[in-house]
Length: 468
Image (cartoon, rainbow, N blue to C red; front, side):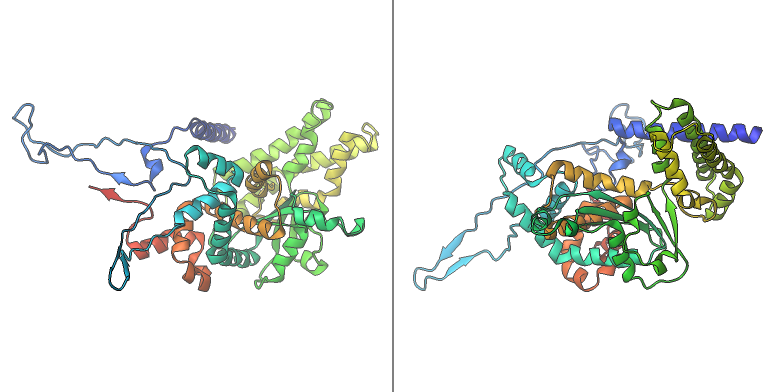
């Protein structure tokens, strides 16, 4: 009983701390240390005062170093700023030869290209960015923005994306899903095809983690389903050690085009959150039965929370779920059989369909009781979709398959930076600075190599400086 009470208190404390962090982020209250990548300006006392001097107030004591005042100062500017340069030209009145300063002026800097990419990927379409720039009286056309993004992709980001793709193909855990997208080129081509040959466009997400615990998020936008894109990824796989753990929802598209010999080498998990949502959506109409199912599923998640609080490894977590969650899974399926057998629920009703979903995907929904290491649900893929959905809400469509591939690839790189707590803006600038080397050796220019390479090249942490 004491152990249970301690667990309850630990869960409450963890939830309270999580809610506190969410509230802090929501209100925008960040401390001085949260801006570690920002330049630091050291301001001395001045007036000739320094350590060891006599106190100018009392004249009796000596001055010594005390706790400094740490202050923040914010300034604003347009996403893209411009500078005008006028080069003086001197011409010889005899030979007519002209002389000017040899200093090179780059029209488009690395930081400008990085800003274009980040604004677009974070949901700001080019026409809206153009309108914003006009408000600062610094106009940049939409075509120019796209041209610079194409250049950024071709020069350095494409090779990095291909390396991320290769690394992802040899991982052991995958979270996959699909969401709809519109590509005008495909829509136009579909008009000339028979209905049976027309293909709907999707953005597939494949989230995984390397052996070094580095997160990778891959986005693929085309007229293929997630299963087809995942099959293409496994075609270049060279690591055949052990089974692959694959998490997805109940859609058959997640396994389409996967040959049976590859499926036989997989542990296929089904998202418990999707199955739970089937009952949650009917709570208003069938409160008695749905609440019962939700409580049983909630106990499984409480057991998983216990494992997280106590930092169980995958083997301990598996054993704990077998000891404590198996009974709740049994209760759920016993209840489903009982309701159908006694004809208390019509199989074709909304509640009946929700229960049949559990029956149809029983092997995947209960896989966490026999194979350890995977989450209970497909949350990495669901959370990863937020960027693509934000782009879709603001831009509506891709014009061509090429533009869809470029923007999906850039999204993969930027979200991978985000998931590994890497400064994406600094990384893109650094990547462009070393673009020729990145083309030849992309494995040395992956996002998690950023801080290490910057330290080697400059001797200082990235984007940090002290001005005396």
